[in-house]
Length: 120
Image (cartoon, rainbow, N blue to C red; front, side, top):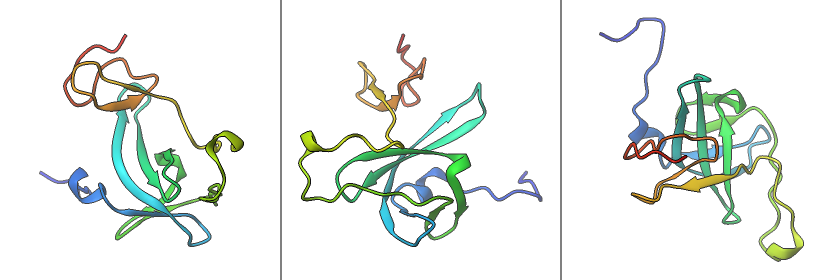
């Protein structure tokens, strides 16, 4: 039975949504969602316009409707800059790949969210 005080959104409706920063700039699209059950936190993996992958915590999100609206401004390096000349943006977090199914997880993940394989 659904809660009356909450709004539930299926993961399938979030994947592919555009992510927009507080200034109204399109950052990219939602590629994946990660859940940290111990910390009770959700993280959104965004494929940015400059081909970078950025992770944003639920605390960084202001609203989820037709788009993901972030609470902060995000400055992406321009597409003309070479990868060797740019440093990683502060929102880029390390990730690991599941050896069993190839899914991408946050570096602190102990188990694969897709297939359950131990990652440690």
